[in-house]
Image 1 (cartoon, protein in one colour):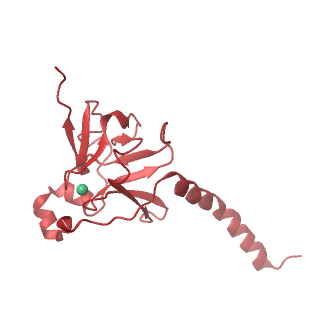
Image 2 (spheres, rainbow, N blue to C red):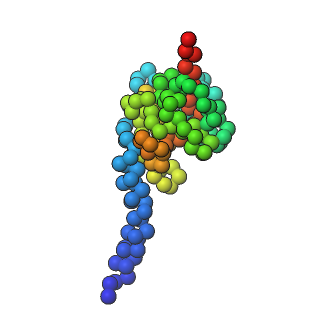
Length: 171
Ligand SMILES: [Zn+2]
């Protein structure tokens, strides 16, 4: 017969298994990169506060989340590109945007994986993958492994972090 502490260790491991599985799964599916903020975007918090609105500052600099269905772009179906609200770096194309039903603008992939970075976020007591602008380090949202083809990823972003630039109409 096993001593109690061995049984409880086994029980603990069984309980943790789904979390370990999720962690491994998300590691293999989301590209993980380090954010190296470019020096010209290494602003003080008061400089950011004067550059951004209150909501933009809360989302981009304080890693907040806008209310679902409250942002400007969750239902935007126009053609164009989404740039970083803070530094104007191109981030996502409308062609990769899809209807996720979450109330936040959702994309299956960025314009370039060099333009966004992904870091682990433990803020809600669970492991999530935070998406940031690779140039200014601004918070964009999170990426989840439940998106559509071809990547299977869902970049769930805040409208407040983005600026939509519509495509020029074709002649
Ligand atoms: Zn940026």
